[in-house]
Length: 406
Image 1 (tube, one colour):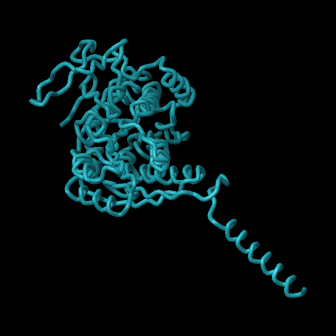
Image 2: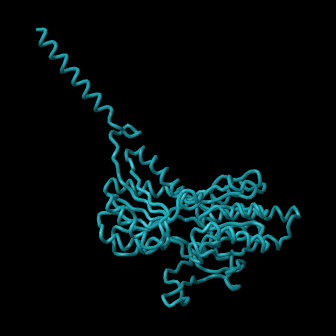
Image 3: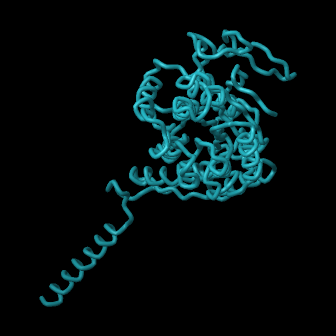
């Protein structure tokens, strides 16, 4: 009898141990059981130390990881840093594919051609080119493009800048004709032109006398040249600097020159507290969460993706309340609501001219380098409709009031 009782107690102990082992398996935070793990590759043109473009992607990566964990999906990221827009990008895509990544994200404009050389050889892996435009229209079902309606954020940041310039005019600190914005641009591509034009239109909506000068550095990421361009723009009389380039050096340069500043990709108040008014950025976690969840579930996701303010994919950074103009917060709230409900169009053709004329037909460069009518007919209902035909910006028009210095 004692032997039987001991045997029963032993069985009960073993059962309890197995139950404990079962409970100790790592559950997801929502209590839905064991989390699934998916391996994702991320190829970056820089690293998080730029405090700009790549840093913003890493912020998106980390936020998406937390959001997915709550959904029962663990992400194992394999990140490639400081990859050039050359054959090293092709190598990086191959290495990530061979390492077992189910999804590979390329974060720079110049990566797409190299990604497209690799994607056909790995049809079961999904490849994404951010800020690009060829993959969405190709015949490869495993290639994708993604961008966000950042022109909306640029417009809002422009309003912050314009209100500051108008405040300086109203206080008599500058003359109306001295309300000049300097813009550090990477390349004279549509992505950059769309952004600085939206920014300029936002500024001019609250400061009618504002003009803009643009200096290109012909690089996405060159901290020294970006600083040099910002310095030259300040020396040319610009009272406020903004940028479409990857680093924080224009912010620190603007501050050293006594100019104000608005940032891109990151809040740069910490590096230029006396200059930086606000910034705007894409929240990549919105897209990353969406596509990783799809891949983990064996589902398809859009070949071309674009969302904006209304979806939380475009955001403003914190306002520098110590130096913004009075009434800025209230004006931003008013305009943001109109952008979200569609009652305000950033590229309203009544708000700008091209060669003194209202824009009625968009033009684009053809394969021979000649300007021809835009076949997509982006101008309708009194506005140029950006990022509706494709996610990547295609506003490449030089409007009156903006001077290109190179």
